[in-house]
Image 1 (cartoon, rainbow over the protein chains, first blue to last red):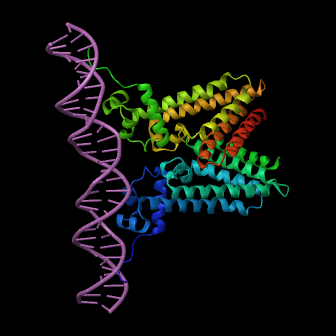
Image 2: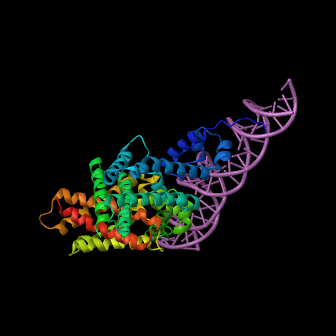
Image 3: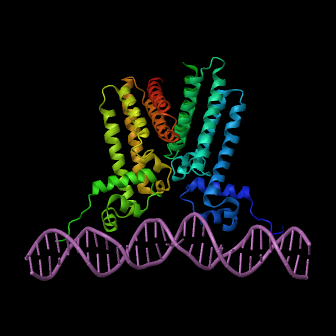
Length: 198
Length: 198
DNA sequence: CACAAAACAGAACGAATGTTCCGAAAATGT
DNA sequence: ACATTTTCGGAACATTCGTTCTGTTTTGTG
């Protein structure tokens, strides 16, 4: 039962790997890159994460978790739902324009990558966006009030998710901050209006 | 001036290569794949296209060209602009749901791939979406009529492009045809209304 | 202080990558 | 028919890929 204790800091390694995957994608990241970036050695990488794919899964799970904790939880707790949505989307735009971060969103990037074909990866991504859409719907319902129609709210949430996808992709073309901000702002206004009208 | 005549059909080879890149991306397509798919041999591939990147560029150019010819030209020529936009977006949805075609859109897929970092590739993609947005704006202006405000129209075109991006990404999650169709339909309605209101 | 257990560092693996090169085959011009 | 020119088919190239394996070092336990 004795033995050398592990050196690796799983959390920190996952964080580093996430950045790398986020910026270069699954295919664009080699195990050598991961070793260099995370400080792990191959032994640890395979022992603790089960290789490249395992590491990618952990990265995705962590990213989704963080996204929901930082972005979505404030939405659920907000007293002014529409305002909260505006803040959320403004945050998305700001995040996309932040040059210190990789471009795009790891979840959305992965949607159009080969890695999405993997069942485990697909599960994480789908689960994430299911949650996002669900929370959108919940917040929209609160914004509308008691007379909310469930179908309209669900549809408005789809619109919102659609625009979220759009904004992140659009940001890659660097159309300028005002354009993105107005698109984001309008997307929220329109979604709220859609959720109301039947 | 004599010599064996070339066997390769450039147009057909480009078409085949386009399918492959569209489905698997730049990174996910190897030269061996291209050789197998197009029927070209390596000699022809390098001689006629200048290698993998050259082939990808030709594929992108051809795809953009075809997209504009089939999707956008009807928009420009339409007598009923709003109806034409509806038809256009319905076509996009149908295309995304068509299981005979690869998923997504080569242009949009490439936006979030490493290949987008290449200046030549980036030029083709940007040019394409500039054109798309410009035609959206032109059609929206016609839908609004003489009293169209240029800034509003431009913004509405951004909204439309944003939703186009969204729909294509959203389709990967396979949310069901009705959802996509309603998102598409609403996106057009909203854009037209936005272009009108000042 | 040994002994065993675990992790480290990196060599080694076969397969796949994009590209280049070369002998064989084929078609044209004389 | 012959020589020349060009393509063909695939071998060969050096890298790089993800993964495995093998000594060596470091730790905890008896």
